[in-house]
Length: 69
Image (tube, one colour):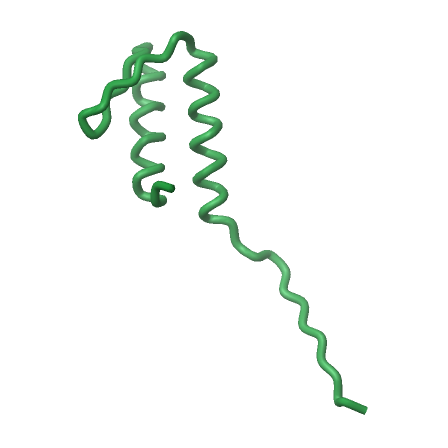
């Protein structure tokens, strides 16, 4: 799996291409051509899900203790 920096770079490149109306994205010497904007949106959603999965934090910590009695 890619690290957070790489996922973020891929997402930024894909977003820039999408906003420019270009369906071909080049990154690290690789070229990907998307068939439609919906396909690009699905790729962006997947990247965002992976990024959010790597940065998820624990929101609540519950501690239970006992005196042993």
